[in-house]
Structure formats: structure tokens, C-alpha cells
Amino acid sequence: MEGYTNIIGSSYDFDDLDIEGRVVDEWSAEDERKNALNFRGQKRLDERSILSERVRLDNGQQAQVFSTAKKQDSVWYTCHVCSDTVVGLSQLRQHVESKKHQTNMMSPVHPRAKFIKLDPKENVALEPGEPVPPGLEEVIIKNCIIQPKLDASKSAPLIGLEFMIELTESSLGEGTYYYCLLCDKNGTERNIFIHFTSVFHYMKYLSVYFPTVARKLQSLPNRKVKKSFGLLVTEIVADIEARYGRLKPRSETHADFHATGRKDEILMAIRDGPHFKETDGELFDEKATAENVDKKNKELCAPPPPSKIEETGKLDENKELTG
Image (cartoon, rainbow, N blue to C red):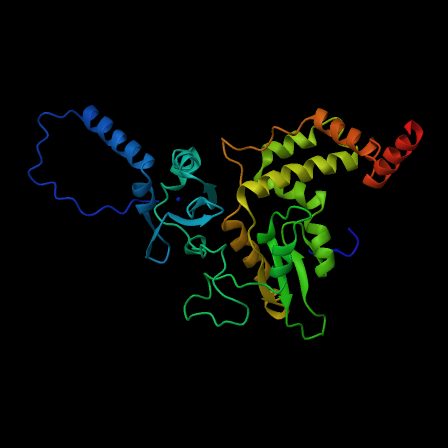
């Protein structure tokens, strides 16, 4: 793209149980197994019990498996063990019962880096220039200079903003620069908007986090009708944004970002953080059909509707003819 260059789970924390004097005569091992399964099943379906689950971290501390945030009249649940974010209690229950979650929960310890609790106010805790409280440098994502413009941008959906890095304080006088770590692209403020609203970026994000709809789109026989295909992809991404909202970019200085190994560290932290992802109940693949590409193409080829001025002129002409 012009203006861009390539850049090269858990053990449960139960209280100690006093099992002395336990009566087992009337219980068989099978009865106890069924009872335990029922208990765990009930626990998984109860929100309070789900949110009370804790796991042991690799630094010896314990942390809650889930954190919550309320956005757009919905409750978002982030599973730090799986690095998944779901919306609503129904999706939370589906996630807890998924094979992925249950497998990850079997791990005896979990990396501390995955347990970053974001601020409920759309993962921002500070205004630009406000100092970070001591000890919280690793858990707060600062507002970026570009954030007001992102908030004001409504002409096209913006997805994958968590992969945008704003680079500041260049010693070479380059000004503020931007990277998309998902696509390995960089550019100016103007160019980064073009990139983040491009079909290339949309499809990259879909292929990673919404693979079902991405596969369907890539298999469409008429996907080479680029403009129509692009309109359909944009519409699907807009549906995802309408459902989940937007995440936010993060800021780094040029010097820190280009330090040895730092870019890889940031990318790993982003990948381990929250993302919008497909779930069993929401794949967003209903519109990914060849018929919808054809429909978009017909809409593009259709003549524009007459303007109000033209319609008024025709009415005046008819009055003169019939008068």
C-alpha cells in the first residue's frame, strides 16, 4: 500500500478441607464422581461462581480468571487464561464449557503477563500527560494522541486498533508515526487511517479472529470483483464493530519501540490481550455469499436516483403542460 513499508490454563484455589470423620459408607466412588461433576457443572453456569475462580501465576501470586467491563449496555468478560473476550452471560457460559478453556484451566501455573485487567472505561485509565501510579506501568494503556480522531471517525469501521502503535518522541524529528503490528505496516496519521479501513487489514483481522467468515469470503467465486467484494467485507466488519465496539491503540516512544526485542514483546502482549473473536453463537458469516457480492455489484452499477432539484423541475414542467 502506498505510504507504507514492510516491517520486518490452571489449578483451582480451594480452601483446605477438613476430611476427618467423613462418612463414606453410603457413597460409592461412582456416586461421588457424578456429584462432583454436577457441582462443577452448576458452578460453571453460575455467574458469581465463574467470576470467583482464581488460578496460580508463575510469580507465585493468585489472580482471578475473569475480569469484567460494561460497554454499550453489555457486560464484557475477559478470560485471562485463554486471552478471549466474550459479551454477555450466555457467551460466558459457552466459553467456560468449551474444550479450550477446560484444557487451559488444567495448567498448574499461568503467565502473569496475560493477567492484565483493563480499565472498564474502554481500557483507558489515564488522560494524556497524567502520571501513571507507581507499580501500575504494566497494566495501564495510555490514551494516544490520535484517539480523539479515532473516536470521531464514523465513515468506516475500525477493527484491530489494539494492534496500532503510536510512536512519539523521535530524536530525528520524524514526528508521530504509526505501526500496525498485525499487518507489519507503518505510516503517517493519514496513511494509518487508510490502512485500518482497507480490505487488506479487514481480511487479515478476520482471518486471525473470525476464521469462519474469512474462509467463506476467500472461497467466493466472484471475490475478484474487488469493489463489490470490498463493500461486502466492510459491511461484515461494520456488523462486528456494531456488536462489540472498538479497542484502543497504545503509545510507545521511538527509542523504546526500536530497542532490541521490544517490538516482539509488545506484539506478544497484544496477542495475549483481549480481542474480538468469533464464538459458536456469533460467526458473522451469514452475509458471506456470492449472491451478496452480486448484489453489491448491481448497486454499484445502478444509476443514481434523481436529485430533488430534478424532480421539482419535472413537476413544474408537468404543471405547465397540463395548465
